[in-house]
Amino acid sequence: MVIGIKPGRRRERGLLNTDMMVAMGILTLAIMPLAFSFFQEVAILRGSYQKSVAMELIDGEMEVLLAGEWRAFQPGRQPYPLHGAAQTNLPPGTAFLTITGQKARLEWLPENGKTGVQVIREGFLR
Image (cartoon, rainbow, N blue to C red; front, side):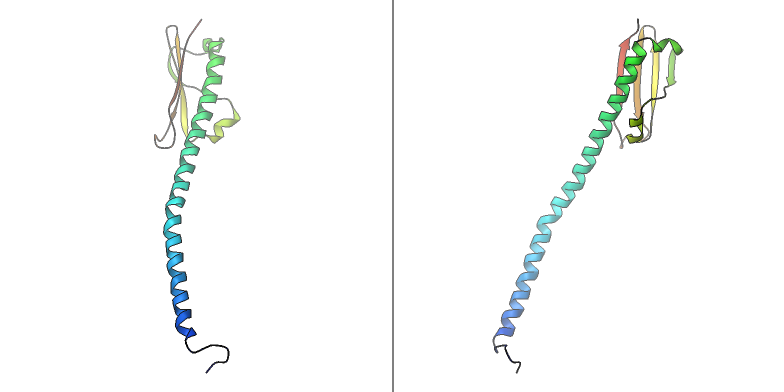
């Protein structure tokens, strides 16, 4: 007989361990959906951020084009280089400028439709 342990305590300790394991299992089951929703929110926030960066770049470039820079380009659709350090935060994609008559259209298209949002701006040329 071990000193300090009463004869009926072994069974009580076993039940305490079982209760602890059940409680940890319930806690794990409660936290798993929270973890998955956290990862989903991160993806949504990243997409919103990338959309706002693309909008900022396209809006700024469209202002420059409408101010008279459009004259340096030929009519038709052509790739357009974006100027701005924020473009490093975008997923891979290409900007296109389309000039038809008195209308200019600047759009940013992601290479993969799942990783970005298409941003389009149009304006009338003077």
